[in-house]
Image 1: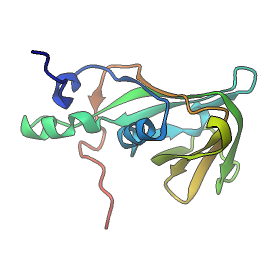
Image 2: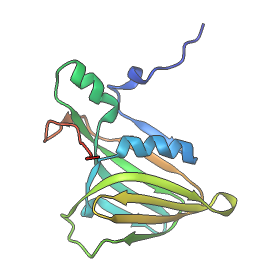
Image 3: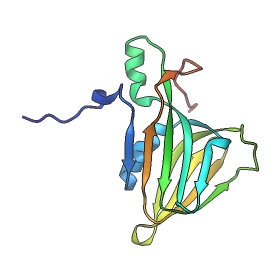
Length: 159
């Protein structure tokens, strides 16, 4: 008998996930919520039609296990990559220096015609990044070993 994989089966392994539809993207959005990224670690390669961010994401998939085992919560550096991007624009963000730290709240997708659409990366402080895409093709890949979160606490959002 084959058994379904469980969430906890992969909690210690690096993530390497792809989102090709809105349901997939909701999973990635949950995993990158509260990720922080220096503005200098965001790039858009127009020739390759690739928009990428080097983020420091909170390891939500491990947070419950860390608390159960009474060990510190963790973050990990990951690449969040959007392919097939036609255009990118920032909304509500002034020209900032490369050291400005941005915090990701959510990623959403609004479908257009024939698989095209608009991806919005919502940032804390009323900012956002809007991407016009030919098709939804997003990758989240952990690229370092986890490290203890500097705050040693899970992010919280007031009600």
